[in-house]
Figure 1 (tube, rainbow, N blue to C red):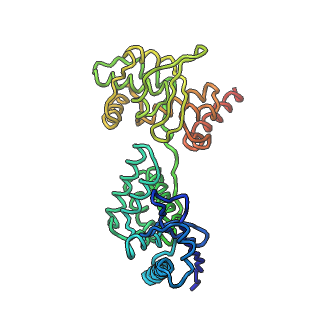
Figure 2 (figure 1 turned 120 degrees about the vertical axis):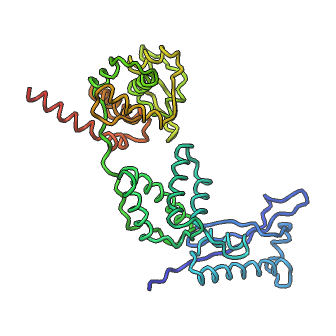
Figure 3 (figure 1 turned 90 degrees about the vertical axis):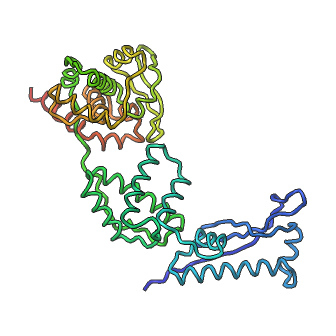
Length: 372
């Protein structure tokens, strides 16, 4: 079995920059393991000059204190090794703080990640959903460092059997991010995703053509709630806004004769600037800027009724409007790069991957023009 060599360096400090009003500063220990460094304040204060003089005197209390601290670090490394825990700056620090080994559970893994990594509310909630699913399978109190590649594959199989491949892939991507954070931070000894291949699946290609959008706009609808949902959908298809971002839209701006909406996406905090197509302006003015929004769940349910009433043979969702907006712009000659900015994507590659069907349609349309 291959032995992993651990290089450890320990040193003590009592810095002038941290002295209190009485001239005392905390005694700190600097731990460097395999190039990674952490500082830990010890339960003792000294005057920096006294500490500097006494830390090498074997007869002094300071020398006895730091000697005991060194022994504590040695005990920590021995115990961690005995119980199969990783020897890292994080585990050593936790050992000293807690007076022994503290089990790092799956619940700890999610909680520490979400505490130390700021996310939008929408993304935060998605991580919590993954946490509930993962903990329901393995238990929240299970040690995070005991999760193996087999466990990850088992969870992935469960997701693929219960959800769409794209959804399963997205959740596995977030789970991988959490375990990578734990591994790189020294919280777990191995990275269980090393040999895991995550399929992102084929992007959903459902979008509406301008003809289909016009059919929805022109359809006479007598049911008030469906008529309002139709207006919300048409506004989305005229702005490319996601459902959550649409709720934050307060005004439509105008510059050089172009009307547009601007803001930051709730999901990614990426800035977007999207032109508003004429139908969107009409709907915005009809409601005086107060769109009759409802819950995402009800909205998607009513959109199915809308599709049936209008004779649309496609499954329409809130994302369909966003894809339809991108499709209309692309067919009018707007570049992928500009569409990415309008949709608030983090990069042009995201747009190319998610809206790959745009390129396919463009190839067919260009070919049709040549043949004609």
